[in-house]
Length: 377
Image (spheres, rainbow, N blue to C red):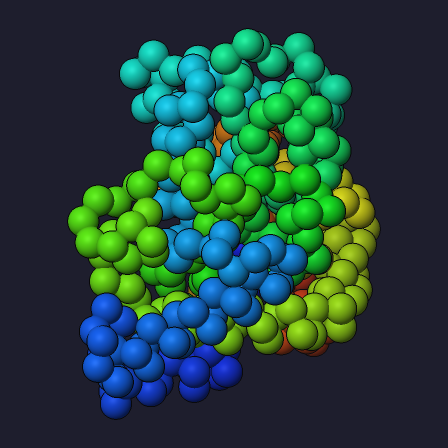
């Protein structure tokens, strides 16, 4: 099998698995316990909190552990709605943002949506026209989960701060893959999910610059300083910390390899398959992201044929892969419904090889030709 759907989830690294093992067996104590077994679990959590904080240049007390990006995003938006009656976000956010915004709108919260250009970039100057007296939060994703475009986060954050508005970024696709400095980038809140950077599923974190201003999200015990109740997922948190440190420590080399392989893949596909359009920005994109709209085929059909060849790609984000509707992200780029249905996403990692990509591209060419031939019969 050749796995090329790393934007959906990544393989848990050996380092993360090894770090988790003791907390699944001999060190299984509840972190709230005051005896040694509990203290060891608590110490492991706090060590991970410090590690995550260092990775984004933040204080440890500003990191809160959650079940993942969706919970972190929802927590931020709930607070934004509490602090004011107007939130600004983009039209291509992850469903964790957009569907929560719909729910808030149903409850009377005013939401403004920023459009993107043909490459998926939010132009910061349009934010000024969206601001209102009641605007409490601007939330724009760091990098898009489908097309990989990296947004001008520092500039958006600067506009937010000049207007005394909090700025949140969903960095689920970006953390561990590109450098992030919350201070330099003017970020007040940031969401991340472990399984996107070779950690376990079901665990993530939320960075909050001023936690004293946040409302609790889950009520119950006093875990996470009373902000997020529930017994902590100790093995998951430890595994996430190990994966994060591994990702940060070798990021430069990994990015260079992925960008080289990504560009090689893009160039081959553009030159060898006719009527193909690259979606997203040519250079301001995640290192391993490739997204194409291919005229004359259905993306889901192509994904199935590639699967038969032992190659895993996707027709969009994992959260909407079962939908027969064209991607709202691709449509936001100005692509019509019919063409948008012919979109596929290839997301590679540094473990992939040139030989694997050559095989995958050759099979892609064969399958596109076959699907186009069937469509003309």
